[in-house]
Amino acid sequence: MESVRWPMDSRSQFSLGRLTARGTAKLGMAQCDIVVWIAAGILILLFGFQRFGTDKVAYTFSPVLLLWVALISGIGIYNFVIYDPTIIRAVNPWEIVEYFKRNGKEAWISLGSTVMCITVEICQKFKNWHKELANPLLCMNTTVAEALFADLGHFSVRSIQLSTCCIVYPAVMIAYTGQAAYLYMHPNSLQSALYDSVPKLMYWPMFAVAILASIIASQAMISGTFSIIQQSLSLGCFPRVKVVHTSDKFEGQVYIPEFNYLLMICCVLVTLGFKTTKKIGNAYGIAVVFVLFITSMFMLLVMILIWKTNIILIRLYTCTFTLIELVYLSAVLYKFPHGGFLPLAFAAFLMAIMFIWNYAYRKKYHYEMENKVSTETVKEIVSQKSFSRLPGLAIFYSELVHGIPPIFDHYVGNVPALHSVVVFVSIKSLPVSKVPVEERFLFRRVYPRDLYVFRCVARYGYIEVRDEQESIESMLIEKLKDFIRDDIWMRPAKKQVEHHDHDDKEPEVDSIQSGHDDKEITRIKEEEMEREMEVIDKACHFGIVHMMGESEVVSEKGSNLGKRFVIDFGYNFLKRILRQTDKLFDIPRKRLLKVGMMYEL
Image (cartoon, rainbow, N blue to C red; front, top):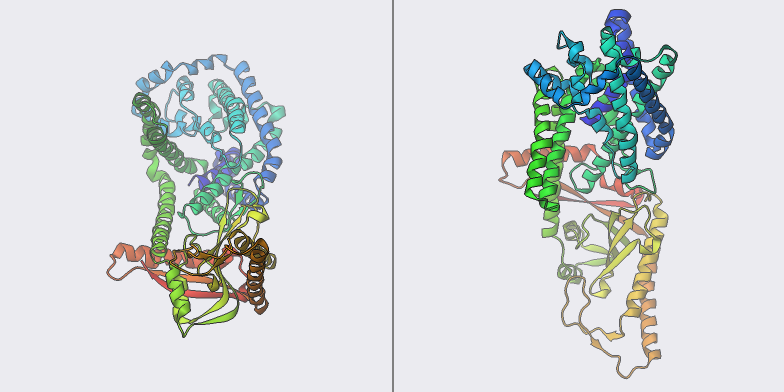
């Protein structure tokens, strides 16, 4: 919800805030609708700019943000000095106690507005608002809390600490203090305190920078959303989408085209539907306080399970942060019927998608692990008289790293033929920008050796592309040959007399090294190496085919209604509308053979 609310709200908060605040009185409803459509256009441009990456966006926007921070700080100091320096008394904690004594229930309701630090909504609740104005400033400004949000995949810890503590928080607090001092002397400027408090000579420059800053303010939330989706993908908690890494320095700087367009559509629809910042603010309050509260709950788990913190400190943390956040949460829930339902509806929708995908994903993984094909089964299949070997090399793609997937047994059971050389490939991305070519492929051989069946893990960095299939194929074959050479030279010359074997382990053999000199051993190894290289070259000459399992997941017979709905309808629907496996691996479609199999989970 934050990723939808914040870009849309920041558009309205500044570029529309000045106009819509007085729009119904001065501009009229028609002009306000035009402004809303302009905001929608700005949103579309912002999301269209995301494909250039966080680095380029940051380099473009940083000077504007620094100028914005300097302006609001300078104007805040100016207003503080000129109008009412005594507003500094608001830092006295006792003032908030007096504030609640005087206003009771109304003070509690006003907490839902102080979450956004919108003094307007608080002050409108009291007739003697100008006497109470200093008190809301005592409440924690969670707009500053949003400035604390930054993903460590995008920026370093030190940069976050310095920018937040030395720039963002001081600037925002100075700006709000200056506005409070101005409003104390100009109570009629309630609806547009930010702009009315700006000196006349600085008005239009401030207005232009404010519009640019409001656009830029969404960037952290959008980038953070991309990172969260990427992490959910790695945990199997979100459907497959394309992830584009835009930096070779930071793994977390990503761009997700599908989700970018989805966010854009949601933001535009909410902007056109809500129109004003007041309705948007009601949704925003619930979203941000829930984020703070859930973060505190996870923090408690970290303190208990990982840090092993003293129980006294845990209770102290609970009685301060958690208690305060619960009070804020109860206040913002008061606005649930007035737009506050939107973040909860978004959250329920996304949670349903994540639960459905993760549930079926785990069931499918356990099914493949329990039904993976053993080496003994492969030997039995190949040894059958009706089974034949076809000339050529087959690359069989699988998500299963340990073992041979059950779909292989399904394939050879229906087509009693196998290529002369088979390589089971599992493609994995590592948390590094690039993987050296010599470390990219890890091979293991499935024994006996005359099967010519290999398992391979192809490792790629997060910014490396896999769309140049010809070079990848040639690289894989080259590294396969290197693996065979190393395996032969490192293995003592032996007579293949099998005693027993296990999965992926070479059979025990009787050594024939005694009586042979080094030249004889070298000759034996060279002959064996030439023989194996000839098999690989001959297979490549006849052609390389890419094979991929296309599993259809259904619930097993006798499953309850909930399980059937999650797997048969929910998971399969998501699988159909999202990216397929062959698109994720960028496999050439002209030489792609899909093998279908039904998994009963």
